[in-house]
Each structure stands twice: as structure tokens, then as C-alpha cells.
Image (tube, rainbow, N blue to C red; front, side, top):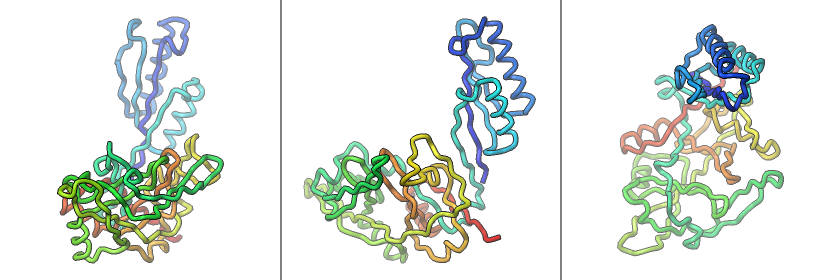
Length: 305
């Protein structure tokens, strides 16, 4: 696993209030030299700013928490540029890590999200709204009835996720009868099924089930790295623990797991909460065969010293 910072720095002649354009170019050349001296992988746009286009973007790559990263950041601070540096994290996994991890964090993201549709609460699904944290306003919805939904919205998908919504209800994973039968034939574990009650034209009904994952993993390893954002609430959760990095589990925590699992920790999006879905390699291989292609991250095992 290789963790990289993808950094961006903007030098703007107008914004930085340089004494003259010549002074701006001299400062720009100083920054150029620093990146060259530290042999930083870099892309500049444009290569040569002009008085008409008097700005410059540096896009650069540094290894996460490396010596070079800290040295460059110290220089940026000395040059009063630190507030103009923006980073995003990129994690690259090896083929071996992907193939040998006992569990994989599975994210459906937008390819499997039900978008531009009515939420199940609009069809009569009932939820109980529970305040989790009075400081940040985080809430959780508990579904207290069968799932009522227009199953025609599945279209040709075998699996679809309705993401949690702060105003309407909790997330739901919906699978077709075909996929439910395959799970049963393959002996897939860690879930139960509840019928989805179709609301809509009878001839458009697709027989579906709500998939409820009912095995929760132990807490993450204390050795897992995390990043806390300014908007993260430190009273109710440390959201950063599962926002950027793959899940880290102590070796002993993996003594028992199912094919489908939930993380003990929950992530927050727009104040609604949702656990990670963790699946076995068996699930991934089955989904690959069925051409169901979510995004996976391998679980990192923290071995005892």
C-alpha cells in the first residue's frame, strides 16, 4: 500500500499582492527551485505566466508523512504559502494486497445508488428518528416497517443501494430475487432478507428483497491512521478513521467474520450515519463473475508484536 498526497499550490500575482510582476516572477523562480532541489514530481500550469495570465498552478505528489513532505511543508510555512496548499489523499494498493486481504471494504458509490427517485418514506416506509449527538446534530434512522418502494427503479441492476438521507430515512441495500437465489446456492453468510413491498404498476414489479447485514465487526485497531477534518465532531465520533484509509484490524479481531459484515464505526454524511460494508473475497469473486463492480479497499491486518 502506497499513500500519496496529491498537492496543489496556486501562485496568483493579484491575490498575493506582489510589489511588481518582476517580483512575482522572482518569487515563482524561488518556488521552482525548491521543488527542483527536493526532486518533487511536479506539473506546472502554465509553464510561464504572463502579465495577462498572471497565475500559476503547481500540482505535485509527495508520499504521506514522508521526511520530504514535512520538509516541503516547513518551507511552505516559511514562505507564507501553507494556506494556499491543498491536498487530497490517494492510496494505491498492490495486487497481492487486494488478493490476500481476508476482507474488503466495499463501497457502491454512485454507480449503484438510486438517484432522482422517491425515497421509501414517500411510499409509506416508517422510520424512527433518533438523535445521536446534540453537539453536531448527528441522527440515525431506525426502520420500523417493511420497505415500501417502486421496484421498477431497479431496472437491470442486481444490487442497488438507497443512501441514507438526513431528512427521510436510513440507507437500504436492495437485491433482486435472482441475486438472492445465487447467495443461497453459494452459501453466502452474514445477512438476512426481508421482502420489498412493491408500490406502483403491477406489470412493472421486479421481485426484490431488502438485504440486512447482521454481523458487526469488533472496533478498528488503535494503530489505524486517521485524519480529522475541521467539520468532524470529536464528541460523537472520529469520522476520519474510516473516511480516508482502509480499515485496520488487529489480527485477533479477524478470528471470526462472515461473507457480509458491518464496521463497528460509522461514517457521517450530511449528519446521517452509515457503517462500512466489509465483504469476503468470496463475495468479490462472485460479484466479478456477475459483473457487479463496486469499489474495494483491502482490510489491513495489524499483527501482534
